[in-house]
Length: 85
Length: 416
Image 1 (cartoon, each protein chain N blue to C red):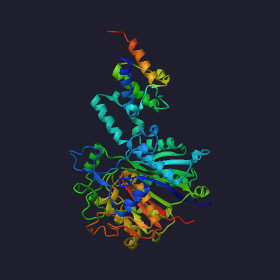
Image 2 (cartoon, each protein chain N blue to C red):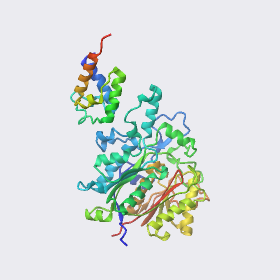
Image 3 (tube, helix red, strand yellow):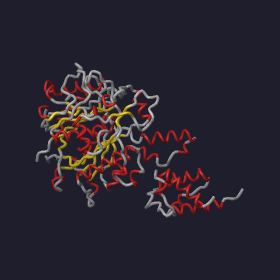
Image 4 (cartoon, each protein chain N blue to C red):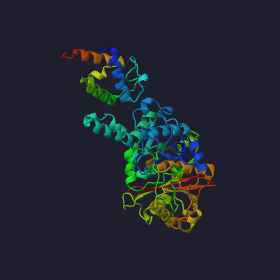
């Protein structure tokens, strides 16, 4: 999976949870300041990621993320760290 | 004995099926323009009832920031946006020195029904409780509207939702009056909201056989006090008012619309959906409101009725009015706002308080439209079909909710 694909999937999840248009979500968008994500939104984002990728992002990990790019990179690391079948 | 604090109305905001600004709303009411039409927000295939009062082309982005409106159900969006309009109208700046002296009291009978249904469908379709959105509780809770009003406008005083079905909005206005008179707050953002136009909610009201089935000409379906009336038309909306103590309003040289004089409320302990046929419980709420206002029956010169258009409410309300006013009942013009905008449940009492204020301000009584057939059991003056010019000093506004919950408010012209 390319980084662009991962960004597209992440953006789709954020768009659905936050009820925003995809075009409003950019790689450099700040999760709190630009997208207004709060702790309750984060639970829904984490649940959607888990459902799609079977990856668990903990709340502690989520608190350290500042931008959409940070989130995409965190997902990429976790996907790459998974044992290959 | 200390003098009772006087409470005045200094701002209003309304989102209704026939108007999304105060001017547009009043103009439509004055001209007898209905906001009832075929339901557009969902497919009514399989429903007996296909009509409702929708707030048309409502976009919360026109009023508040995405950080607020994206987190709440439609009912709360209507409330927050109406609150914004009311605050702008009043020019009230919430006191940064003492935000705890401004309260928020909002009535809603049902809360976030739209989101609730969407989540139920999601859970069932996608298999299990883990699929529900984490933000469900905040979006569904009736007090999300009062809390988000507080967050949007940094208001930190007493904050609660009032839920008494069809009288929620009126009860909210009344309880705000109590808080203001008690000195707990100096200002209050108060009102009622409802967004009940969802498939399951419509089906639920339809199952009670209380809705009009006159789908053929939607604008003519709601016929309060008419012999051919067959039920109310469900609608959505929001009405928000800014109440202040007179002292606070005068200190900031606020424009004062009217004075809130009295509040009466009770529960008839009769039935969850049917009104007590003799109207005596509702009559007691009316008398209680007049007593609270220190006013007699001769001072009321207009009544904004609950006037839903159901066979039972309209005759019970007529009896209640006659019980209190006696022969004078025949001389008081009675108007039903619901004839034009339908029944917006928790919003209705607050919207009708706004209509009462505008009646006094503009010296025009809006009509009860669609009145064609006289009912011998409803034989009072319902201002049929055309508005009437009149100097009105005191309006009694009635709201009678499911659960035998009766509320009456007294609104008067403000004289210094």
